[in-house]
View 1 (cartoon, rainbow, N blue to C red):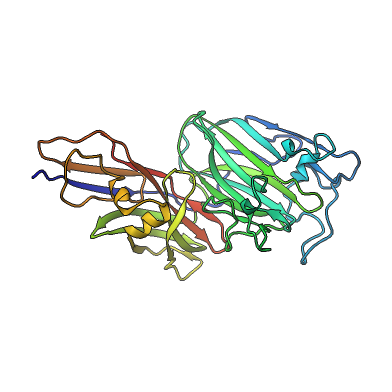
View 2: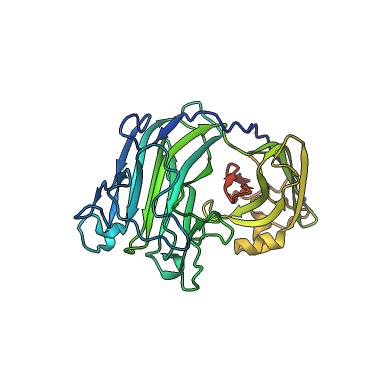
Length: 393
């Protein structure tokens, strides 16, 4: 009888010292000069409607030439906490280009190209977001739903989502308020950061390294009189703003459970952690939530965390069988195999060692993605690198 023994050890060493005052290496404040600091900003539109103040628009503005709706639920009458004089704002996007409703124009975008990231690592995006927060549609209302999305592209390798705001569907009919959508399901999370006319800063991790980055903001808002939004002061940092310093993360599978262990050396305004998995690297699902052990808003104490997760539950959220999940980290076999198969775990690097008998192994490639989300007390989330854990032969 041929046996195969496989061990996988995965570890994350993340020297993410929290330096919230560090200067960005790139920014676009939307001011008249010096913005962006490098590269090129290209907008699909930069114009308003037929008369001032504009009732529909997608443009750089100081706020004086746009017509905002009357306040709702105690919201402000104008955008608050604007940094500098100018910001970017939009409303009823499918009318801006032609003056009449046009489905082809319901999404508009801004793209920044030529951002030099050579030698940069552990990058973080920060930006200010605001919205008049009623009657935004989500995926339950079909393909024309609304969103605010930030994506990035490193060395032309394809667009990767950094973060998004989607409708939470709180009216029960598929419309509602814009909230942060952590799991990428097209619906704002019930506990996600809620936008208002007061600008709020969000921080999202940038995965990967390279030479040149492109950044893209996409907005879809095609309902008149309600869907107002604004953005300001987009920035990129290196090794900055992360509220948790990780000493290391490792994970093991034993007796049908994936146990994830990690240690933090410092935590600032941290509320909890989320362990997330994905089978396509795009839509992530939280499989476990762990409360922060820090008892102070800013802690320099070391804390150890450990969470066991049943692999049958992981298979359920991924929509695959438990047997298929067990095979994700091992190649296909031509014959029966005994011994235990090890599941993937969280980290930025992994080491695997395998010993097999003389009968050989079929070639194959199986992958799943994991990441860990750290959630601030205000709901803002930052993420570890997305880890593709695979066994390719």
